[in-house]
Image 1 (cartoon, one colour):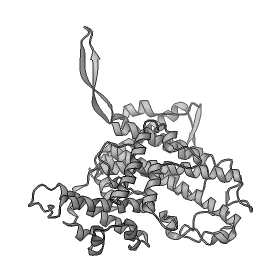
Image 2 (cartoon, rainbow, N blue to C red):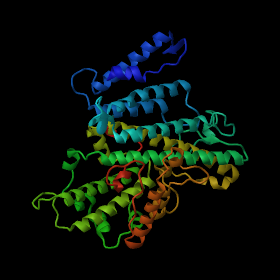
Image 3 (cartoon, rainbow, N blue to C red):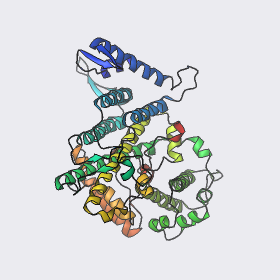
Image 4 (spheres, rainbow, N blue to C red):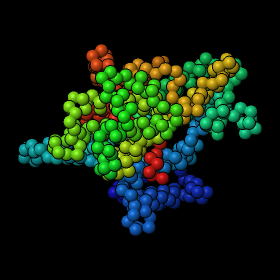
Length: 481
């Protein structure tokens, strides 16, 4: 496989010489250096990151996932400013991510095809093609990646936006939990109308990228199997997982997710993650109880199937709202466990690549919002006391009240004012209008009948849709480090 990757994926600029690690090499020497580098990386992946050869390495799926995560961390860092990537760093990112993604070209499935023999006989044979989920999602993620790089490149000639120097940092330093990030500066009278509209367009575009990457990542996590280690750690009933107070609220005859969240303590990242972990665990427990056929099984339940389904829908509704109110919280115990014990290399690549794109998009949006806040402050200094709260900055919490039904309506519509949608940009809009219309009608119907939220549509899906598909995090699992 390494030889095939070498022949197809090794791209070297067509120049007479190139500098690598400070050495000026000829084209032939450059090709050899790149090939040696690629062999070293793939050798490390094949050994599961254990270069000692002692057999203590991780699975190939986890090794590839870690490689993509670490590559993104080294290439992009924290993205403190809105500025283009350095050419050398961008070239390294594109070259090495191509190496890692090239593995998916060899993950195939058998499909039926027809072959005509010399005597005219038509035979049905089985041929290989790239697995469907990879064939659809890898090109989409590549385009999202390119859109983010193009967005940063567009700030190259921007003269109205700059950042405070080290000499001015003491006077204009941020007063929130991101104090180390430079403060953006705009002209005394604020940005011009043209720049303000252009900045809003960039934010809308990045927001579309974020939504698309989140949807792909959520779908991949949903399709990953729940590890036995996680299941064994669960209590035998939902009440033990949730606690009496939360259990009574979810199983009450009248349930309002908005009111439920207003009664919860969501003042810190730890408390939000703890609530998410409890609810995810209860969903897994209720699902196993519904699928337990043996009445003597430890997972069987005396509660009716209809009530279990209702409790599960309510819990998944809460998880959906938490995901979109707090997009920056770490990954849950369930997500970390799935990634750690996953053995499907294709899913591992899709999950890690979509996660780092989602994380980068969220970071770029935060930097754009910093500039927009500085612009608002320049127009009206009285508004500067502050729109940015510590939790709001780190977790993406929106200020003001939150209406879960309105938010899901917005997410389902996926429309951005004054800009084309991501589906239109990527050519996915054709033939999807009827599906989108049906989804909106379904939402209205369920709101009137049962006051339950409908599920937002996916970018790509082959399985049963669930609110759990919206579970994901924008950070690398802590179990990896």
